[in-house]
Image (cartoon, rainbow, N blue to C red):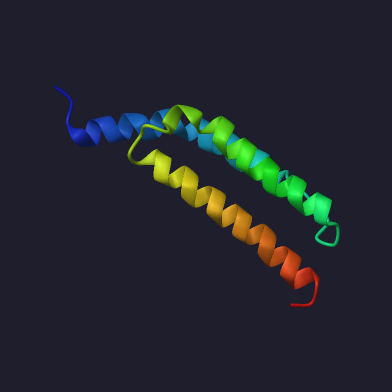
Length: 88
């Protein structure tokens, strides 16, 4: 019988390559903070990448909240870059 820790460890090992791919794809997203359509496209791309790559982890009680947190962090970072670029 597997302990809870064994199950969590197995889930994390399964998620590791997906999280690495997620990091690569999210870091590749670029946009021009002065062009609203570029910002909107970046926001859409962040959501799509996260939702697509982490779809298999939606039922996972550990990784599902991580997906929501990552999405929030990346969207906040985009908004911060827009505000900073516009002198705010």
